[in-house]
Length: 115
Figure 1: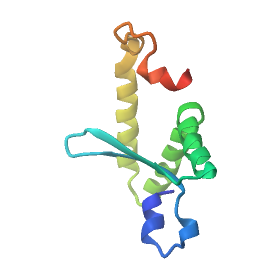
Figure 2 (figure 1 turned 180 degrees about the horizontal axis):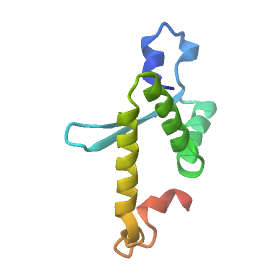
Figure 3 (figure 1 turned 60 degrees about the vertical axis):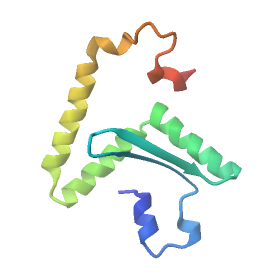
């Protein structure tokens, strides 16, 4: 998998360290948090913008899941991966018709990046 944590723990040089990163994590109660960081230069700013663009408009999430699937196959954890995919699909299905009913907000928070 393409993890920044792998880069930090290896014997990498400063050039190998990420110039922009978005970290998403959950605590014991299932609350989701994120951390976002980038260097103070135009390339890093463009890179973090590209991360958000690809998450929202391209197939970065699918690419991440495919990479995760490959890693799970290597580690003989295919069942765990399939359970996760089932949970994702169940959450998507549970949204159902309520996905478009966001208390009559002018712009759904889900679509704010599409403005």
